[in-house]
Image (tube, rainbow, N blue to C red; front, side, top):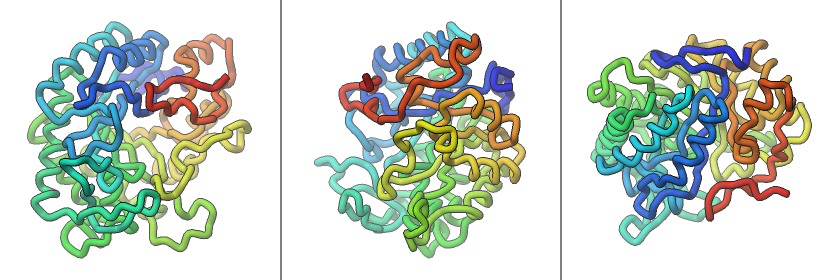
Length: 363
């Protein structure tokens, strides 16, 4: 089943494997994608990864979160992306662009010393208190996202993924912890999701109704993982309600994830060395999958072929999203299909998150 094709909106993907978006630290200083990034994506395509999601690309310079992060905030980026996409399209794989604004986790610069966010809630991991966005800031950001998707389509991407997870701007809006507004952008679940809905509507005006738009969704902020938080955070059942709203507004797939920087090691947990530690967001993905009729992609510590097969056959997800294992073994999908391997050799040490360029640094 994990090697069967699947249709996502108008997109035909030849197997159920997704390369989940991961920052490569390989773009130019201004965010322009480099041939080195293309090398990574081409290798994944050559090794039979069905759907490749790029590292997160910021839609406005004020939304950059890291050094050497990819950008997609200017039309001059279209051609460099087009060159990379053409390399991937020499194979069967599809490639989509993940677009993002860093929000309260954006990196301060001399030009933008304080990040923007829905509300001025201090980030306890950095000590930074963001500036609450004005109505004009929000409307400008909607345009930034829509234009980023337009550029992605013009470059030849097969679709896009809106990054609504991991503590970046769109997840700041949907979370009651980081969104404490009392205007049309905050309060109820519907109001907190409104900015995403408006991005989709504006984007559809630019790219039409057939271009696939997916979402990476925080199902939880992650504070309650140890049961001791006490914070008013995003979690079930609100994440299910958000998923329904997204489906109603033409989102064609949801990748289920969770966690923000403040919550600690939630997004990319280390030491995934037993089956019971795998797929740590699966109970969220199952709840969401039962509530919507679009493909659900599950990310988070999936390492073994038996687990992958059971997640799909038992209704937890339609696709399996991995990245750390593919950093160590770009040919993992071929090994799993041939029977050469039943288990990724990745030990989830997280040393691959290397500012000199993403790579496996585990012995």
